[in-house]
Amino acid sequence: MTRPPLPPFTLQSATEKVRLAEDGWNTRDPAKVALAYTVDSRWRNRAEFVVGRPAIEAFLTRKWTRELDYRLIKELWAFAGNRIAVRFAYEFHDDSGNWFRAYGNENWEFDADGLMKSRHASINEHPIAADERAFKWPLGPRPEGHWGLSHFGF
Picture: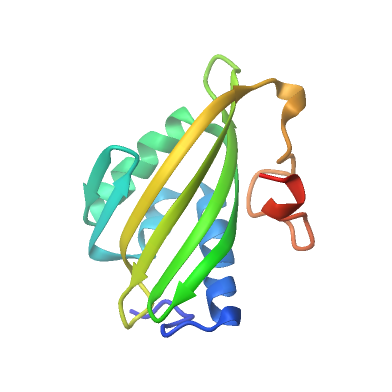
């Protein structure tokens, strides 16, 4: 199975890869999102270490059960060969209606088929008031033409 665009990345293909990842995560469909990773993909997500597609799917299921109305924007930071670095922000609320915004950076490494074989994520979050929300598009992928991360100064 291949997952274009494939490395080595250009500015255009790296930008496309980042947007495809963002769109996938905004579906909040763990089974679909997990298919973007190698069967033995290795993650560091904050202080949690996840290995393999089944574990990634379980991790994402837990995540999106707790992080409701999740909306994410990713932005390309750097790329070279088969690696991409991104920065991101996402907003969600918990089951008590408390809103949060998380900020982070990810380093990605891809295999020749365009599947992500490693993901290292550093993430910080803080509470926000509901009226401080910046990501208000309807659930699902961010609409084309919607502001990116830099617009918000995040």
